[in-house]
Image (cartoon, rainbow, N blue to C red):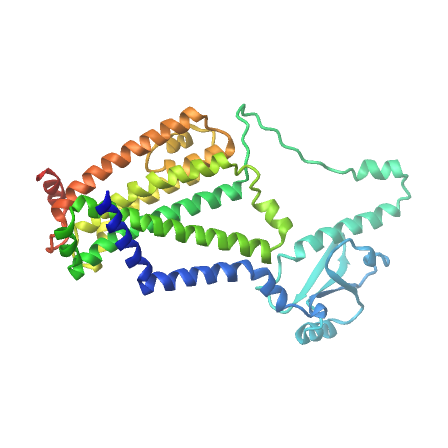
Length: 403
């Protein structure tokens, strides 16, 4: 155990000391900061209120002077300017855009004048709906209908949804997706560092010194432990930074609607951490196996391809079965060891899994971790000093059978 901790400490210090690791960490933190400030950046470059004004021109007086009553948050200016004057104001930045309204036959046409078509279109949808509703109100008032008749023609519509499935599903879909993605990137990138570290040490011949000081088993266990601790701390740094930036720079009401964490209980936090640890070790040992079969850094990508595919299959199996969380495939993903770290915490958040199912899933994951660790350690011990070309599957199986 002492040798394992010594190797873990050496690996952690070596990883933190790498320039690439520190630079990538700083870049990701900077991207999180910038990403959370995108609404503020957009607002900063559009501080001129006049440039956000939309001019509305009612050529045929269809609205009979009621455009000032338009219920919209946009800056509206009722105008009678000509097309040329409106175009010039838009080009000069005095107007954001203009809407010219006129009627041809039984068709009311809204003609938009915009500076460019790339940035226009989305914000005009709500305004068009409000103009249509206001025109309808103007025409109804001409019919001199009573309040009861008006209410019968224009009732208020309410939408409600009821679930027919007996399972009471809770949680926020956006929060679930974020949790799944964070787990995936945490496990994937931390585990990937194991194969990179092993190949790098084989290239620099550091592994020869390690082998003379301790056993290969202690080396592989220590490496996965050291990289896992550093990776977990790095992910926690990213998550904490993202949360702080979100609550400091983003709209709190929007955050509460999109990322409702009311279902994120201490029990869910414990379950997530429990799944992260064996989930990480399963993939870390697989990457250690592939890393030990190559001696050149340029061969790492091709050697890791089978493990990368397995990782992607596990993640997408959990991610896409969220569309049918009560289905059999999602239940299978929650038990399948290579997808359960990404799936079961989401089922716990939705309230779909009992304690028995969670214990069964964790048991299968730990059992898989033990089997993979045994195979990886056996192959790593026999391939650690191999400096030849990349091994094929036949050579890997041969190494496993050797004592």
